[in-house]
Image 1: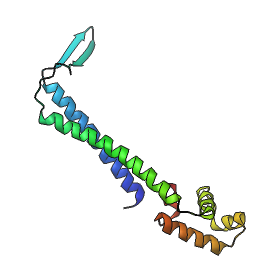
Image 2 (image 1 turned 135 degrees about the vertical axis):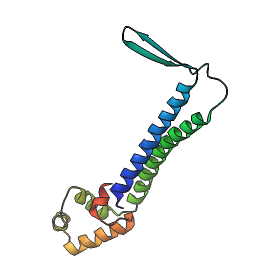
Image 3 (image 1 turned 180 degrees about the vertical axis):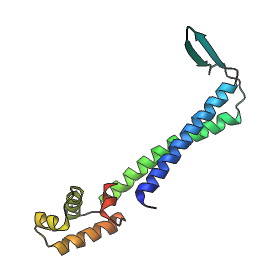
Image 4 (image 1 turned 180 degrees about the horizontal axis):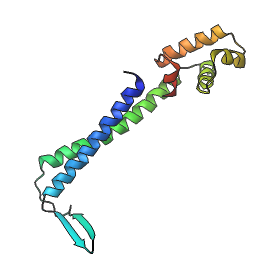
Length: 145
């Protein structure tokens, strides 16, 4: 499974658990006696009274909180860890390798990079291989993540 599909799957799972968690929380509040509905002249208003909620905590409420809270925490952790991790990896690159990464990101070929930096194409290939090893990647596409 490539990196894009893995990230897409994570996003879908987080969204799914968040939405299911919200649905469970709504179901829990809706089944309690603290939900009031008012209709007047074709306008409906639903009020959930959180203040006068009974003291017993239902299993639905706990499940909903776990799903919603877990998906939020997982999203924050994923963002933080990936940005920290990629920053740490980028710090391992030499100045020349950072220049080459910048040129790769601007869609330059190895030959164009060699001309721009006044080095041979084989030196560019060596730098690119070193970049792949240091960043633990296998292709140019993974540089864009």
